[in-house]
Image 1 (cartoon, rainbow, N blue to C red):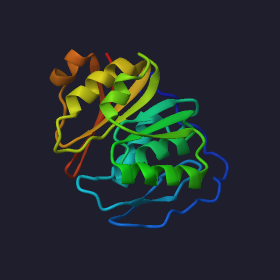
Image 2 (tube, helix red, strand yellow):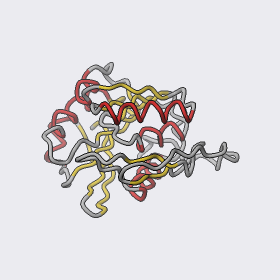
Image 3 (cartoon, helix red, strand yellow):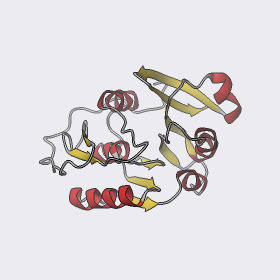
Image 4 (cartoon, rainbow, N blue to C red):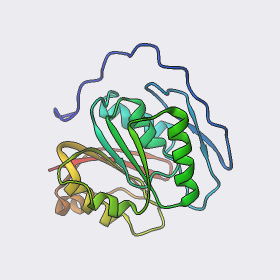
Length: 207
């Protein structure tokens, strides 16, 4: 990890009993690791809602080193909350879930209360605006997974590049690979990349 992420921590003690959320709408996804391992999160039937696949999330947190104790995180387009709750499950000190859809935001708050996820905060609003409001160089992990059909990738990355800490990471999920030629002007470097079906997963850091 070029010294940017902590080495994987030793296996934790037995996690707390998983809290299961009832499945609704289009199905469910599950938290992969940490204190809420195997907890299922409902996926509402919403146009454009595309939860990050389990395999991709598992790979992402392998890249990050599993233990996120003390990290400050922001999930800018939270959707089901799978990425943000995964970070909180693995010890993140604070996770802000930002979601513009009222029904999805309400579901996230219900899940937060059910899990007693005190490190998580749910905010209904615009993900790019939330990224721009971050204190510069303050965030350890910024999760960017906007609707694939929109034009939010560039403005979200521009804002995230200002918000990420020098030793922090930006996760980008997109329908096409972002090249170093595209990332360089933003002051970002591609650290890891994975293609899984129609999804391109990128882990970025400051140049």
